Image (cartoon, rainbow, N blue to C red; front, side, top):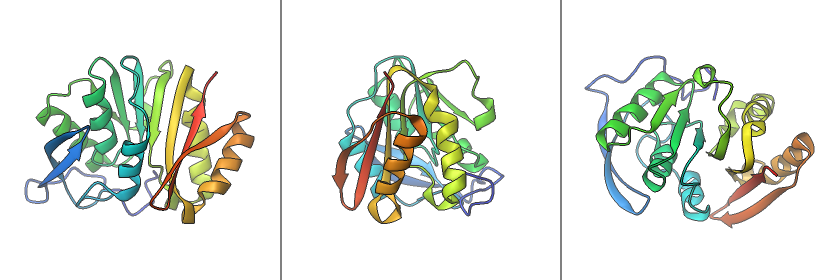
Length: 201
């Protein structure tokens, strides 16, 4: 999730660039808007679908984080399942953030806050973090990103990350356990993807 990756677009999509997409999220068929210049604009990608299928429902209240939100399938799902929670959709891609805002408005999900990383207040702690992290930004950038956000889990909070087995899920699991000093479990494995879970005691 850096300004150097190929999913970064500094400007919101124009009317001509946006297109409607029908998706299944949180057990509902929804119409959303997507556009080129964001990750997986034509569908809910397989990794995100595995995450949404395999993790338990998010906490019903508190602050929830979709880290690297893209056009918003994870954030929208969290908000639909937990209407009393505040959902932070975080990305550096201004086009993605604009799409999340449009989709949240379209679906009446006014508890979603689409924000750049620096715009999330430092005193916000997360009851849950869900992420299809941007593995392709490189190991150093990915590690920096995860070490910035995972320590902000509130007591009792859980982070669920979906990572392709062929993209280093098992080595990332070991690294996270060492870096965070806490067990990191592989809680699901499906279609070549692992769901890694970090729990804050």
